[in-house]
Amino acid sequence: MAQLTALLSVSDKTGIVDFARALCVLGVRLLSTGGTAKLLAEAGLPVTEVAEVTGLPEMLDGRVKTLHPRIHAGLLARRDSPAHMAALREHGIATIELLVVNLYPFARATARPDCTLEDAIENIDIGGPAMLRAAAKNWADVAVLIDPADYGRVLAEMSEGGIRRDTRFMLAKKVYAHTAAYDGMIGNYLNALAEGAQDQVSAVPARAPFPAVFSLQLTKTQDMRYGENPHQAAAFYREGSPGAGLLAGWTQLQGKELSYNNIADADAAWECARSFDVPDAEGGPLGPACVIVKHANPCGVAVGATLAEAYDKAWRTDPTSAYGGILAFNRPVDEATARRIGEHKQFVEVLIAPGFDAGARALFAAKQNLRVLQVPLGEAANALDFKRVGGGMLLQTPDLKNVGRAELRVVTKRAPTARQMDDLLFAWKVAKFVKSNAIVFCGGGMTLGVGAGQMSRIDSARIARIKAGNAGLPLAGSAVASDAFFPFRDGLDVVVDEGAACVIQPGGSMRDDEVIAAADERGIAMVFTGTRHFRH
Image (cartoon, rainbow, N blue to C red):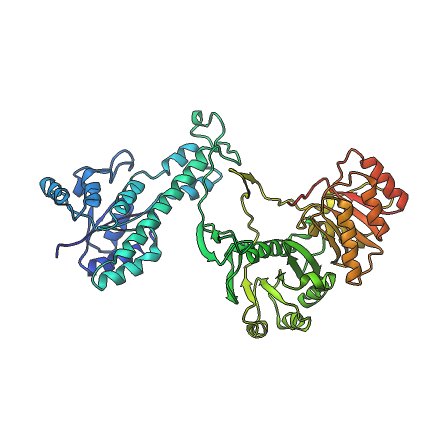
């Protein structure tokens, strides 16, 4: 059997020396370039520089190393084609059976605040993608690796007689996904540059948040039995590296496979729960928090001295809606909290927290269908939000605004007390996560009544009152948050009639003066945030 040849040229050198050493043990000839060749030689491995094969040195500041027929013919020649093999023999070109390449770190380079356009351009890899595409095209004869995670599998198969056909095809598919993402990343960067950037290549270019052409790549993690409804098909895709704290970084500890609705509702619950770790200067009581979500709307939110207390308070808001809901906590769940959930006999679809103690795990283990997700806390946010429309997509920056105490403007003769201000900020934090039109009654660090998603803000207020009444929660002296301004005084009158003693709202209506006068007439305190939180 002829000696196999591997070409190794990597930017990410994780595990490459050990991999190359194992290849040598298997009798594989090593070709390499630049820094990779130097590293392998320093490790005492027999390595041939690509320049010895091409007969040309690296040139143009390293831009040209592998762009040569002796390399690409060695990758592209079909071993089952007599004409191809005859051409190689005629020109004295050896085949290459294994290609190990990963690309210049374009994303890391352009993430630096001091990255100039010139720096960005120099971090566009040319030879690497060309070799990857060539090897992947000829996958039946060439195994191509971009990911150190695949080194072990390839070595194991080579030790057992050769790399399997299905493995080579899998590796080729990874390559084309990788090069597509790489080109998309470069396209997003270049298409976001401000006009005239090309004339100032030594400067850090201004970039628009939305490129003229936008590319996105996601990886499928699971197919689902169905989508939002049984007649719809669905799957879940995640980003390559979800930021710390985002739901896609979950670890499922137990329970059935997550459904489409489970994931959508879980995200709403988790985002609301982790908002209670925003520094106090940004608004409202902090500490152990519990959020219960049903159909993407919070039906109970509370903070407490303990997680168990927070859960009790959240559950009391709307026990009926809480049945079959999503539970999210911003602190590790202890046994005491797990027992309280059991005592309420609440049916829970999904439970999310940054951790669970041994006692909680043991109690939940008895409920085999309960989906338990562990998500580490973190401050990352999605760079962009997406909304699909017919034939297109709406993109926007996420709603990350948290109104600080210093930003609030008291507009009435009566000012809120310190306790009322805490309740107002708590209510405002919750209203941000309720579907518009949103009216939220709160008091004592818990929701009392939530009205969501109505065409009329007045109807949302009435629904919130009905829910509070059903739960036996009095609204007298409560704080009310409205996600958008009151366009007329009638909306304010309704919430005051239900017992509100103070109101928080964005302001900005043509009739603000009328609404402020109504608040003074009714003897309540009202503050403006200057920020709207529509959520559709």
